Image (cartoon, rainbow, N blue to C red):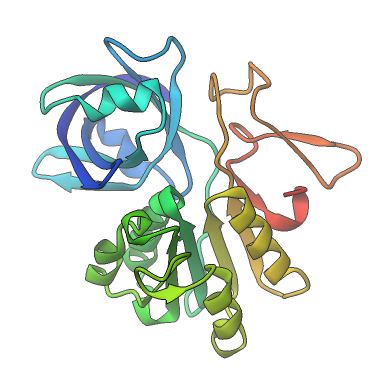
Length: 263
């Protein structure tokens, strides 16, 4: 974990209110793990405190290491980021947090993301392929309220992963919640691992769906953080362990076995 000034390479609006940002980062980010995050701060504007963003992808372009982030404009910091241009500089702290438990060879998995919660799944998908995994053994589920909230679908399809889309209003894919097709495919695919990130009701639904199933179900929690290092106590989640009743999302997570926390 280190602090770095990173140059903005692009900052594109990919859907109304959603942006895809590319940052030139130190080479050490090639070792960033799926599920980890960074804390960002602009040189000018925004709030005093940094804000967390899942690492969406890490690639190399020539001699550059590029970290990509997917974000939604929801507050003063992201409004500042949305107005930034190529060549602007962001202060980035990371990589932070733990990682998803990557599948073993031959294991099938579900990767589920609701809205901006799809962000950490792309790096996971890329690492699965890098380790020789077959895309057909894994299914990506992308959910949103409307078509505008369905993100990164083409990126997963370009990697060869089967993608199932759901929207609350039926404007894209299947109408309904993301857990419906997951439940339908559960017995057929029999995943060894299920990964999910998204709004709290979605995570509750996924945890309930997988309760009693043999698969490892890992949830990446989205929560407001002030420091990202466990000092401020602002991102505490209740644990199912009576001897350790609370966990820090920033240092114990953001990825948790669904059985170890009270969602």
